[in-house]
Image (cartoon, rainbow, N blue to C red; front, side, top):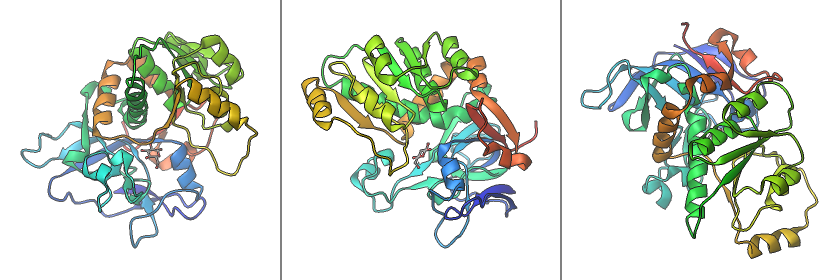
Length: 351
Ligand code: BGC
């Protein structure tokens, strides 16, 4: 099989390798890879800033945003050849911690979890891969063209789950959401807000390209100005932050309305400092019963929620979110950032 591999501790080590075909173990599916999505985490791994290979190996097969078609399935697994499948990213830590022991591996407490294509386990950027049947999620057959958006959708399904659980600690009837950042995570968070019947606002710094149109097509409002000013005007009940840009994070945090819920999903580089009025911020959060929560990864429940959200969404809109499709042999192009990129996908098979 062909696989995209990296040495995670080295810069720009990404290459296309020919590796032995994988053999499915007991209870595993054998899958033909259809596509993988490329995200900021992949960019970081390729630039030598993140990730770890499997034990005793130097190289890691990259790719955690998967889509494949089952070639072979164990009898009685509930899977049949031809099923459209996505592999779960994270596996519980082996200890396991209490959260992992209870199926909440997305909330692992000791950091010893593994992640396919990111940390300690080979990913899905290969023409064939295997996956344990109970870490495989079936997709609606009509989603072949856009099903690679499943994993980022699980991330926002979890973010919304956090918001709703935190909001649910008292009376909560949200009317509007502000999403900061119109990348794939922000736009998919906006989609899930729209599906919840909320008034949706999206803030981004670009004024042109596909993002404003994608937001408009959702029936949402696009904003291109200072975060605090948008907060004052929109007064959202919920904010989902997907830029990871410190001024935006603190801008929205300090301008929340009472009982506001802010969910942080963006990763920022460490080492940048910002002047904040910490006393004011603390005082406002306390007096307003506001909540700020970080959210990463997703568990099986979020995969099920994401599969349902994608099945319900407009296929044309999902398709427009994928702004570039790169064939496997031209993989390097998928790791270039171009101005009109929203989601770039690597096609693992020729159509
Ligand atoms: C992935 C998550 C993962 C996180 C940290 C993200 O890009 O979507 O599944 O937990 O990176 O490795």
